[in-house]
Every structure is written in C-alpha cells, then in structure tokens.
Image 1 (spheres, rainbow, N blue to C red):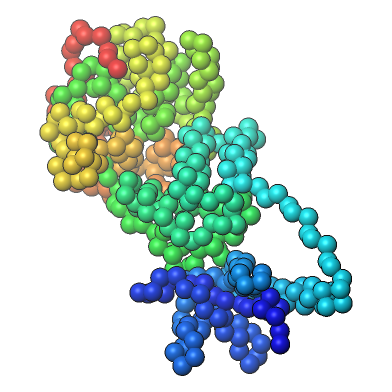
Image 2: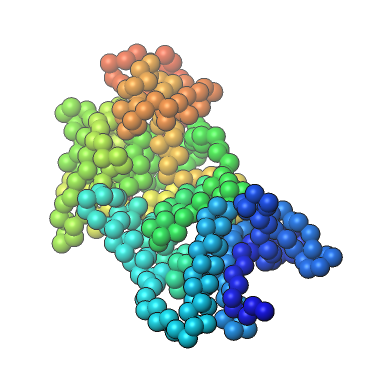
Length: 441
C-alpha cells in the first residue's frame, strides 16, 4: 500500500458562482491531456464535472499528513508537464528512502521580497536613459507602493488574481474608469518585472473588464461657460485661463512657461524642454514625446501676455506664483473660479464631496483650443503642429466638436493676416480686465 506522501495530484483552484474559491481534481482525458478550464467537484456519487474558467492549476502532495500546494499557471499543457516532473522527483526520492539512502536536503534559496522588486522597478524607471517625465515616474511610484500595501503579500509568487482585483476595486471607488484602466495596465508591467506572467495570473475575462472603460466624447468649454468663468476672474487668473484657451498648452507646460520662450517679435511661443537653476532650485520641463513646437500668438493672446508682462516685468515664469515659481495649483484655481461663477453641475461625485465639479479640468482648455482652431483654420496639419501631435488620428477626435459654436469664438483663432468671416462682437469678459491689483497666486 502506497504511503500518503508518495502521490502528487493535479488540482484546479477556481472561483465558482455561489461557492467561492474551491479546489477540484483536474480532468485528464483518455488522450492523456488536461481538459482546459474543467475540474471534478465533490466526491463519490456527488462528483460532477464543473466548468471553472476563473482560476489556475496547483500541485498537491503530502508531507506526512499535511497537504502541501504548489501554485501553477493557467496553461493545461504546462500544468501537465509540472505534474509529470513532480511525480518523477517524488518517485526518485521515495526509491532512495526504500534502500536506505537519504537524499541531501536542497539548499534554501532566499527569495526576493515584493518590496525589493518595487524599489528596483522604480529605480529602473528613474534611469536617465529612459528619459521618463517626473510625473510619469511619480505615477509609477504611487501605483507600485499602493499595490504592495493593498495586496499584503511578501513575495511575488503569493500574488493572486484576487489581489489585483482588490487593488482595482480601490481605484474604482476614488477615480474614473479611465484612470483605473490606465493604472491597471501600468501594474501589469510591474508584475511582469517581478517574474510573473500577467496573462496567466489574470484570466482573460477579468483582464477584459479591468482594461475597458467608456471612451467619452471630447469635452470643450462653451461660449457661455467661458464668459461666466472669466467674468469672476482677477487679472492673474483671467490671463491664466486665456493663455490656456488660446495656446493649447498642457497643464505642466502652462505651469512652466518662461517669458524667455515668448517671442513677441516673431509673434510665437517657442516651446521646448529645458532645465534651469532658479532661486536655488533645479527646475525642468520635459515635453511629452520631447517634441518642441511653435505656437502662434493670436491677437487676443498677444494682448494678454503684453499686459501681464507690464505687471510682472522681472518675472521668469509667465504664469508663476507670487514667488515666481511654477504654479502647480492651476486645477484648484479653475475649480474654485467655476464654483464662484455658479457653473458647478451639483450632481457629480466631486460636487457632492468637495464642491469641485468634475466638468472642469485644465486639459479641457486644450481640447477647446484644438476644436476651435480646427474650425477657424483650413490647414489641419498646422493645428496638428501647434498641438504637438505626431499623427492626424489623434487630432481627428476634435473635428466637428465646435460646429455649433458662436462666430466670435472661432475668430479668436484667426491670425492677423487672415480675414475674419464674421464681425460678431466678443463678450466683454474676454477683454483683459483693467485692474491695478498685483497678480495673485
């Protein structure tokens, strides 16, 4: 009679509807192959074949009377190979014991901790050769540190699909579906770095749900919203939002725009990456895709910048703070002014929890710039260059978004040597407000 520890069994560990996680014997057919995604559940007469796609294979053997499990992937062929290998090793071990030969104990190998993998992964992302933007590195840091804390596992081999789902559930409670999908994709890169295979760790059905999100239509600011928003602004914030609207700069580009990059003689903003030493601090701007570009100074944009320059003749940053440092609170200022203008929807999660409407984001100024400029300009490639896009497909989402906008809005994006198609007057709130007050943060 065989001893209990002379056998190795291939099981499937899967989540079953209404039952939770269960182990069942893997089904090996007459052809000697494992039946994918199926297992036997129950014993004796109650034993039945069950479809279990959400799970993975495990090997079970007994150490005396204690069961020991070894986690495998979700590939039936590889699971069968592991079963045969384990059976051969156990047979050799038991044969040695039968003739009185004691096999030497394997040397224990110190396994690297998940936290160590995290530190090495982030160190790699900070490598100068990768040239990742500081915000990108910061995002990777948040993802890795939060996942390590949420999953609660010490070594990567113990990570399960349930840990990934629990992490994404936490993201869903705080962020939009799009944020969850993008962070999940980044997390898969970290799991791969840890030596795991995301395709086997996470079942296709779960992967499809976690990576998917509703792609919303382009959001642009209407003439009514812009008029109301600018009407409640002081001199500084009026200039801030007008520059955002008429230049199409990204959030980070707005915060780090230098007066040195504004060429009034050539009538353009010459945007490029830089690294400077200012007030004892190293400040750098890394453009997305590292593509420098020129943005024209439309008449109203030029007037805004000239007036702002008169108020801040010694400033280094165009839209900097009182201390002449990059303003990293542009989003907070926008939501505050939108609330003051009575533009909050009053129904979204942001309005309910913080009185900050989700309908207002700095990036929507960039969307508005693209949409209105496309309507005003005949040359699509020109607008593509202003936006810093490398292909027309990215810009195509903005085509037609401003079809019903008032004529005065499109006239803002007409260069001086072009003839405006309409003489419709623009709202007075768009004109630079006369104020003797110094710019505020």
